[in-house]
Image (tube, rainbow, N blue to C red; front, side):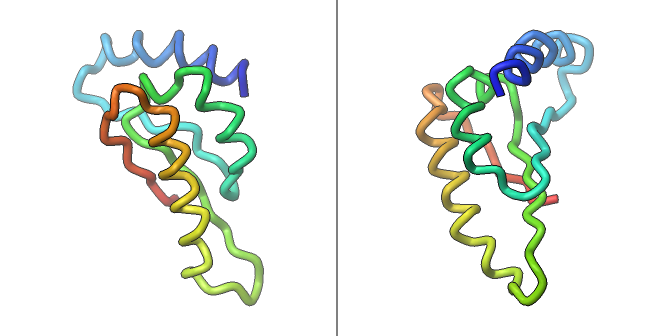
Length: 93
């Protein structure tokens, strides 16, 4: 998580200079990766992304609605590690 954040913190400002109209969504997690998000966000990546992407695959037999607790947990982590209080949506891929 620390290495990913370091890469994103260096790369995303440069990409925004090249394309100020672009939207940059990260980290595109397979599953919800709440433990990874907890490790990632304290390193400042939320200062540079325009959205957080997760791919909340459900196990067989689980309905799509079972994503709601994970979604709320992600929103809470974003709020906790977003000192600028920017609107950072969660994108479900």
